[in-house]
Length: 214
Image 1 (cartoon, rainbow, N blue to C red):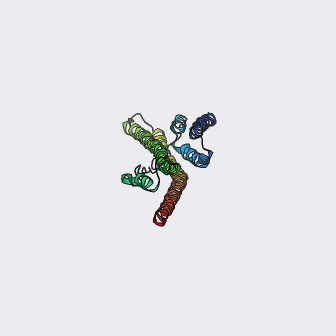
Image 2 (image 1 turned 135 degrees about the vertical axis):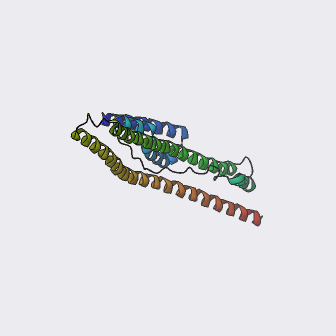
Image 3 (image 1 turned 90 degrees about the horizontal axis):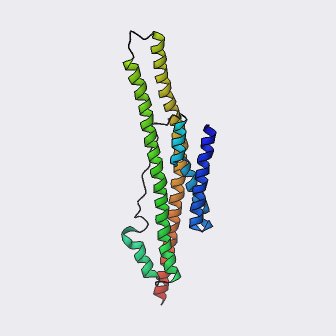
């Protein structure tokens, strides 16, 4: 059953990826889209919910991640103003300049969407684990001593300790794997952003040089 659920989630994820690629109609974004798909593997709600249905103990201490600033692509409209200064509207370079801003904003929006879904999943896992532990503790406290044998109390304590230990161990392993994946995604996004900014600075410098030469 677990394998069938995982396969179904991968099928949904692949379908979503193909739709995004079809809408982009530009295969130079394929690598970026695949990277987003990798991030979605841990953030996709279907995956998290279905794994919970088969009794997976969610890590309770995974980190959540901050969203990126959506205005960083065009702070105070300066990037758009630079496009207007450097190029004549509506020329092709002018459109391409604005397209760079749009691509940057779309990339941040997509990153924030995936990150929000991932953060929501982490919070759901925390709540689910807390409820499991609270239920076990409540049962241990409300079990009548007169009607309980030492063996039953011992079994309940062992189950509580086992649940805590399982959550702790899986938290360590899952936190490491997910942190590596998120770090890789953050690095890729920052590298692409830095490359875009460097290209725009180079284009602006070239345009300024042409203006001075006239």
